[in-house]
Image (cartoon, rainbow, N blue to C red; front, side, top):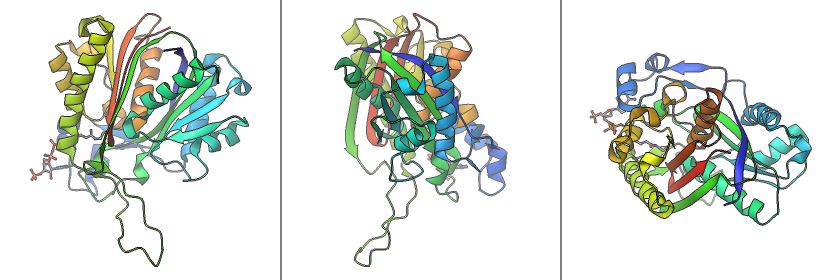
Amino acid sequence: MSLKILSVKKSVPQKIVSNEDLAKFLDTNDQWISSRTGIKNRHICTSESLVDLCEDAVKKAVEQAGIAFSDIDLVICSTLCGDYLMPSLACCVCERIKISCPAFDINAACSGFIYALDIADGYISTGKANNILIISAEMMSKLVDWTDRTTCVLFGDGAAACIVTKGNAIRYLKLTAKGDTNLLSFPVGTGNSPYKETRSNGFVNMQGQEVFKFAVFMIESQSKLAFEKLNITADDIDYFVLHQANKRIIESARTRLKQPEEKFPINIQNYGNISSVTIPLLLDEMLEDGRIKKGTRLFLSAFGAGLTTGTCVMIWE
Ligand code: UT7
């Protein structure tokens, strides 16, 4: 592998919605949501567009990396759905920050950040790009059904941007995709074609318990593969930076890997599940508070619709 992360910065909408706020219009309560998921609050877009959040995160990431906008030679944006289906969110970002370089969106659902790292690695290792801007950005609030308590309480909105460049931080990266549209999906609306015979509901559908089992199984089995390949054990990892979908998923993985709590950072209580944003957002917070520094050994693991997974081991440079 051939890259390192130079900077990571997050941006979340101003409005914070608590579990109590949701209980005002849904048949739910703080006790259920926090005990079953670990979520207390989530940030939800009001006036902000997704590209607004991206612009804010990108400006901070570029400044932290100490490069100029003009040094960026590729933009990869991981999103389930940008502000437009076309142009891509990556192109909207280029317009905002006034750069002109190849730019495209990818959709690997919640695993998107790790998929983007893998694509970036391909570009850097073949010399096709030097400084790549990776953005994860999700507005889950426009995808969920706000009358469905089984899904809308789980998600939040936000973005995170990072600059990656040539380096040696990534020691292992593996992607998987099972091919499944039953357990977690969002059917795109069918438009107004007079010929279309079926209509979709256009909201997130999820079989939560099945996704839960898939997640716990995959984190454990993919970590074993990674550790075997690298000839290390879980004890050699400083932090397990897992997709923040449910605190109980993280706890189950931790118990199976027989590791102490402090090695499994959790911030789901503040943000809910922001799909592909959760891992870079957590990295930003861990860099800010000093948990990640040069030499820190990280295990990243994400899972999501598809069903996709992404697993990565890196030593921070
Ligand atoms: O990013 C990847 C995507 N998603 C995930 O990774 C999610 C993975 N799955 C999960 O996190 C959990 O399965 C959920 C949090 C979605 C659900 O937790 P659970 O412990 O599996 O609950 P459940 O679906 O078995 O529901 C238990 C009960 C049900 O009531 P009955 O049938 O037992 O009477 C639900 O109707 O809880 C009820 N329920 C709620 N009650 C209050 C479901 N949602 C709520 C709610 N408030 N918001």
